[in-house]
Amino acid sequence: MRNTGIQRVAVSVFRNDQVYCNYAYQTIRDDLGPVQIDFFDCESPGCWIHPVPEQG
Image 1 (tube, rainbow, N blue to C red):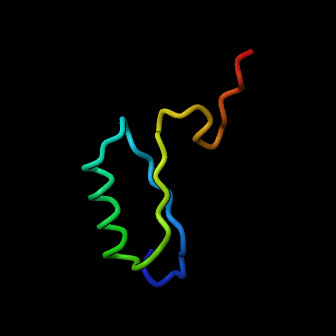
Image 2: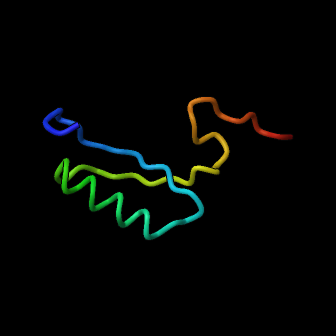
């Protein structure tokens, strides 16, 4: 992804793994430079391509 002009990266995180977040953040910044990095909980309803319908 280096030299593509990418400006934002989303990273899925399992169970609030802060060590993984720190590693991913540093790895991405080292490779891509100052891009926006958004972390999200991989177990959140609707966080993937096919959202889970709301129960109700």
